[in-house]
Image (cartoon, rainbow, N blue to C red; front, side, top):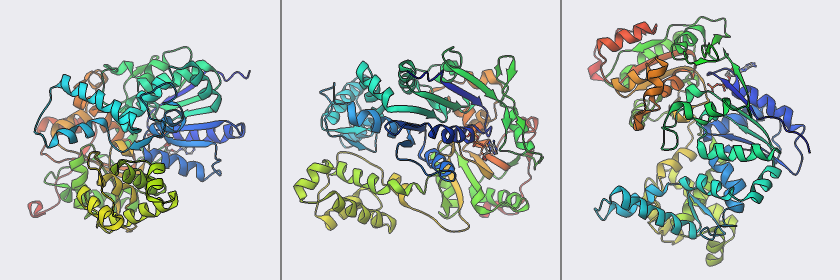
Length: 521
Ligand SMILES: Nc1ncnc2c1ncn2[C@@H]1O[C@H](COP(=O)(O)OP(=O)(O)OP(=O)(O)O)[C@@H](O)[C@H]1O
């Protein structure tokens, strides 16, 4: 049997070329990919999937046995759909994925009753609800990992999976949780899959859960301490200009084998200083200063972006730009029809084969229905769940079962495209991971959030374990490190002198507001 060697882990800071290097590795390995086996490339977001497909697509024709997708789509396709019902009578043979978590279904159940069950009761109901949804073939988003993990308790299935997957590449490995790491470990132990993972612990932006209570236990750090993995460290930043790399190095003081994670800047360009925009009233007030800096650095609109953690800040940015925005995965249109089709079927409480048989339709008819729904969302005939229901009734004479919630907004994100030349990118930090732009404006919602972003002491960063905000110190780092040439930071709340001092200490330039009547904005 061929010895696949130890799995490789490349640990490197932002812009080091981890994804770039992984794409090169993939291209080399494709020459050896056997026709009956798969190469799997796992990413963490749809935007990262799109990014890798684009990078690869520029260099090669993507073969049919190269799968590139999010962790959920990988697990669904390779484990949950084919195998999860085999040794588990609780799972229906025919499965339908729905775009929500079990909690969403639960909240919907209690929304109208006014009841608020306690934690214990809620967990009990949740487990019964999960069982009954699974029995009907509905797999909620949060069930994928559990079902995949359970399936792989079966030794034979582990062998089948390892035989099927010749290569496994994992991008953003720092965000791999314990369950996915368990699956990678299963494949490693079978010794039939070549495994290659890249990541940056400093960009770990999942909140700690009950299985990961402390930063040192995140799988990327555990794996890098294991002899069974071959770990390499890369310390170059090929993305950003000197001022930005110097700023980022304030947050890269982690010690690793008598070394820090501080980066060398590959670029010869020194760049303009990182700037704090003092306007706090709203995002509209921040834009002139940001755009001025972009204009003087000749940065085109499509290379400008506003990034924030909080949903409401992202919404404010969209409003400030009159909706004239780009989103990281807007061109993930390829899957829009199937996403809408799945939503339609789950809202009707059925699956494709039963629906087609009942209605005397073909799967192609179903696709046409999905396209009609897409048009209605685009033209804003469908704007919420109610107008979705009326549209389905009026157009197809079908009645939706309203017990499974879904978000029209999510569907709209997938299908709406914007081609305006002055549109700029607006995104939350999670969706922008792994991507880059010439100019970034990172907006904190308040001073507390800003201070967590600016925390430079590694121990304090790691020790910040408040459940809701444990990832905040690293979120700032992810946002800041997306910028190639211009980085601006702002906060929607006035900041105190001590925060100003902190910005000063980090080498950030603070502007004096240039607007005469900012309150009129
Ligand atoms: N060997 C290389 N030659 C030329 N350009 C490179 C090379 N490696 C990386 N780059 C460029 O540097 C930039 C950063 O690379 P990449 O996105 O792969 O970094 P990364 O380590 O994955 O970053 P992050 O962790 O922030 O997502 C990209 O624009 C990429 O094209």
